[in-house]
Every structure is written in structure tokens, then in C-alpha cells.
Image 1 (tube, helix red, strand yellow):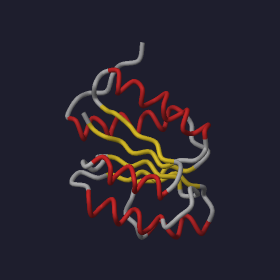
Image 2 (cartoon, helix red, strand yellow):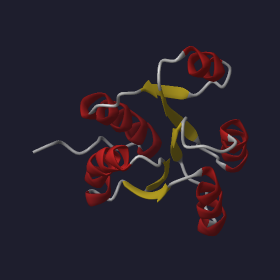
Image 3 (cartoon, one colour):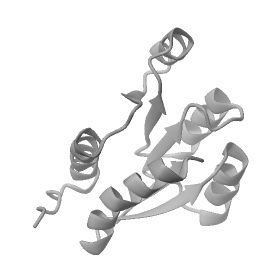
Length: 132
């Protein structure tokens, strides 16, 4: 089972993520933890003892995001970082040098599900659950 750390302070996006991630949890492919800011995310990582396999991070969550991404990459063996952000020029320029996966806001269900199906299949070696 893979571990996913979500760092997001927008309840609408957290609910969207939960609706997608719940499918993987029901099939024992993934479990997830939610932090509302970088400080909470670091605390969750420290408490877990086992680093996350996938981090889903909001660009606007506040805090030292580049430092956090560096910390994740230093701790995680199979880390992936998915960053949510807008198409604003400062965001686009900032992420270009980080070599991370990006989904631009507004986030919708189908692209998010498609991305997560692909990443979870790659990390677990299992096919994602089929929707009823």
C-alpha cells in the first residue's frame, strides 16, 4: 500500500482529492494523510516514520515550498511530487526548474483521476480500480 501526503488548505480541493483517493483505499492500494500547511506536513512526515510515496502539494499553501520539496526528495525512496498551481507567470517560471509534475488550477475530477491512476499503477504495479 502506498502512502500519499496531501498538503492543501482549500477544502473543496481536499474533498475532490478524497473522492478520488477513496477508491484506492477501498482496494487497499493507497492510504493518505492531509496537512493544511508546510509545518503540519513536515510534522506528519516526521511522525509517520516512513516517508510518503507521493506528495500532492498546493503552490499557494504557504511556507517554504522549495525547501519542503527538497526535504521530501531527500527522505523518499520513490517520491513523486505533484504540484497544484495557477498558470500565472511567476508560478510557471518557478516550477520549470524543479522537475516536478504539475496540474494547473482549476482542478477537475477527470484529469486528476487519470494522473493518480497512472502514478498509483506505476508505484504499486497494480491496475487502478474500475469505476462502477
